[in-house]
Image 1 (cartoon, rainbow, N blue to C red):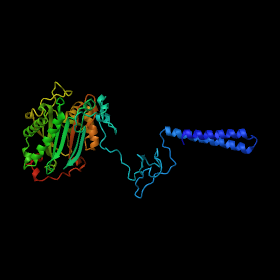
Image 2 (image 1 turned 180 degrees about the horizontal axis):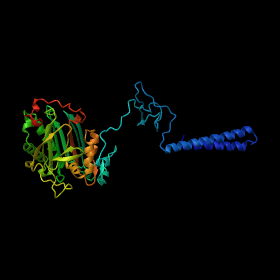
Image 3 (image 1 turned 45 degrees about the horizontal axis):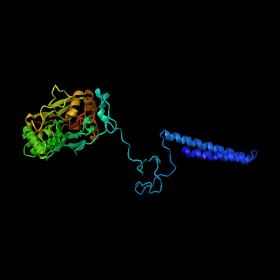
Image 4 (image 1 turned 135 degrees about the horizontal axis):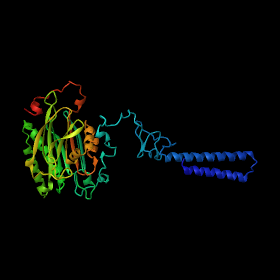
Length: 443
């Protein structure tokens, strides 16, 4: 009962008692008893109304007297208006009502602990701020731009967020890319200038990766990054599908074809090649080992400040990529070589991988943070030690840190992530003959 209704009933009973006192003698016992009874009822109704009001103010659900919504033969919910009753304003019998539907409580087992499990953070990671359900991890004071709403770019563009999760052979992959705080809150907003691509060859023997970062000073940097990443992965796929293609991978050929595709796309749209500048990092990882020890070799080629990082115990360590010039430092977005102008500046390397290894290809929006924020490095080392849900991975890539306003892209690969839980001495079955060469590459 509401407070207003309780007051009305109390007032009616009180006035009724006053009328009885006026029109009937006070020495008649039957009427005196009726007056006292009315007064008691009035006080009880008032106390009940006040108690109900206090419960509502404290947020305690108040049971309703109306019956629960009906269900069909299979337990299907029935709209409240179909049952001829008004929609309730509070749960009934412990069953929530959402948008006019009352659904039964789940009958399965309750979730066992949080969705994300793993070893407890240590060192700097123990002091880092884990993200809430609706937030990203923050380091230091954070950036002011992180608190502003996202805006849309003037030109139609790709989505501001992209993410993937996959398993290929004994490799687990997570990828995420999102527009940086400094690009999404200004008017007009800037499109996401990072791009990535994941692919496999026809036989599923190799995982193909590409991370591209458009140069912010280019008018159509997002176009350059998209063309670079797509062209690179298509070239690698085409080459690996050829007989003995893995043994003939050429970084010079790959980046020359990518630069040509970028110039061609710019000309098709009436743009200058300088309008579509980007940097690029590519990699190819065998999906199965070549020896019982599980060893394999990763091929990587790059141009610009996108980089490769490797997890080493409790921190991420730089493995490959062009470091930024010492004069500009990590606060500078200046790069020496870009596509499509400088494909000849490409570099390549081979990296030995063992079961349990973890590597990440990142744009400078993430790489600069790993290099300069110890707390972030330790936090991601702990969080990404084993594969995690893609939504959690995306939240980590969107970390909040002061002066880190650029787009962020990261692609992380776990090599045989089950190796840490495998009994000692069990080993790994050798792959077929086509992986008989050193490091998993064809002989």
